[in-house]
Length: 626
Image (cartoon, rainbow, N blue to C red):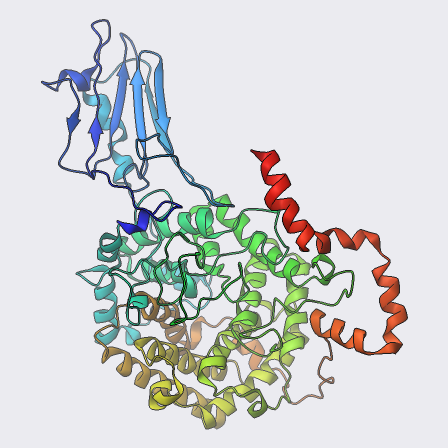
């Protein structure tokens, strides 16, 4: 598959079968080999097997296996009288393993020891057979809902509509399922297994089919899969979620502290729209993406692609410490990217960079997915640690970006291509209200007052994207899915407002908006593409919670808050680049700027990003490392 390109752009040619080599010795008891009539190399037609290997002596035996043996190929297990040798990145005849900066791979090996040799010959292999068919323990969904331990979790039967059941079935069964999509591009191997094929990118691509494109957990597909697993109890959702979580933690996170603070420890974007990934693997783009037909976004990790809630839920369900560490790391990344003193421009200004709150353009710091994802990440880390630094940063971003008296029309929120994501931020603000109302009551009162204004504006002004297709570059099924979020946002805002005819009207408007968006999505034969499916899985749990007010723990407290002000003036601030432009053009600022420039401790980062620094990294340091 071209999914496995080398750095030079070529694809390795190799058989897709497994190979077992037996080397029996007269002095050894090799039970498995004894069963084989021909001890020479055996090429299996079945290319997918999970080997279990046993070494047995006179009084004891050791049995071993490896999880995801073929899924995370290449793998190997070798055994002789000296013991086992496991190939986690096994040597093969197709060249070296090519790595990209910050990648990891995590493998799990199981060993079973039978000291007293209680097993009959051959039975020791059964000791680890369960590893490849493990039991899954799942809490009863009703008990989980009643416990209140998972925010916005409802199991209301009213919400299990035929339309949703049809959509969910298509995602785990048949030719359009996530499982089937793996096969189309061979989304296997140590770097790929767990990620989803971004099949929606084929729609407007003229490149060779299938177009290889990786999703990198956009819209927190992991969280959607896990919540659907908890809702339904269907093991297949878990079989998708578990490897996706591992992939995100190993491959999609930029595991380094040697790059800019705006990149270190961040999450890489999905691969570029409507383009074959080329040699980028799971990074955004590669040098093979030439031409101007579809714009390729440059740069590294960004606040607009930072998803943590699925990893937090995975940690809660499994106890996985790596997942908890990544959640904290991604929240720390939000703080670091916004810290002007960690920026290459720090010799000129210490103002916040604005990277944590901007969306689409560096100068826009109103509601958008950049702000929303940053707040979500900070909230998830605060949930884990209760560290005030995370909650404090949330409040700072909120006051920077919204205000109860904002002029919403001036922000051009109806501009589909630029401002489509503003409900992402509004839902993050609702999470802040739900999670932190007891600890930050005044900030929640301020936030709710602003949300009330947005809710009224949405009810009066919002329209479905597909009702105005001329405003869309590509009027695809994704726009119908995005409209689901507008409906759920209006419904949720109404749940946190004081009970009144106005809040009831907002809730009904949101429900009608959601219902029509779902109908529009159902009309598309491409509704099971990965991107609209991820949005659907993200929004359905929120819709279910909005339909069932009993699961909103803090809505009663919020309903009692006075939302009529008075409010402080909007925060006035300059993001770092704007502050530098203002300082260089204002003679009155020059003395203060000169003093800051004299701080030699601030220059290493700036020099590192200069032509001299780039020459040092690419020529001198790289030569030394070799």
